[in-house]
Length: 314
Image 1 (cartoon, rainbow, N blue to C red):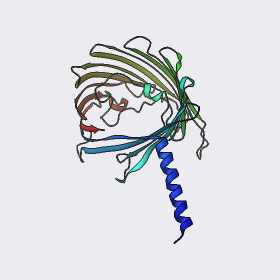
Image 2 (cartoon, one colour; image 1 turned 180 degrees about the vertical axis):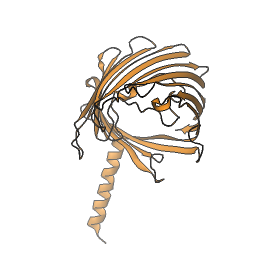
Image 3 (cartoon, rainbow, N blue to C red; image 1 turned 30 degrees about the vertical axis):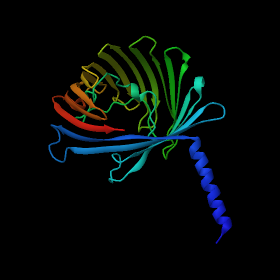
Image 4 (cartoon, rainbow, N blue to C red; image 1 turned 90 degrees about the vertical axis):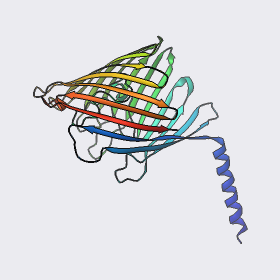
């Protein structure tokens, strides 16, 4: 019997135990069953299932900062039907100095969440139906840095994102910046600007949004522009929405949007949708029905679609 080997193994196990006890580990996630139907696709199985689990570990450093890491296992993003770590990140919370995050995969800039913030109970008005104009503001990709600070001024949060250059085509780095204000009760104002070089063509983006919540009602307005270096490829999205919380469990919403195109051969894409969401403890039943005219900017190409979902979260 190798006593030395047994001793080293026991020591290693003890060290691992000490390290694990020094950090807090949590798990969260959910699963959902969805059915989607639309006028454009009448074949195939409309049923889908999405599920994911996120593990998060955090610990306090000697200087008072908090470091955390998050790993998400998602089966819905794996075309082969298996599971994979589709999102990984590490965050350092430096208190009043701000929060710095590095996303090893599934990184998203600070401008992208601002392209349409109109309140909805489920999906945006331009979603569900295939073939719609792709309107994106801000860079996305693996190995991305983001920074956020809400301590500089009461009610003000400033954020920045940086996606380093790289790739076979020697793509330039991408950046975005955002600011939001929540200093008045119920009111949120946000603005963002971005330079996205991660796509096939460089795209400069801007976004502005306002939402206001009063009692059970929330109204919102968003506008964003994507200016591409490719000729006649600029797009502008304008979105409106109003949601109503009928109770603690039931919410309904009405949403409208319009996408205009720089290309004179394309017409404005117009959409209107209604959504609902009903929560039953850890279960949520929700649905969306959208009608979109001039899908993808093609005149008289009008379609409607719907999505129903049953989700469980833990």
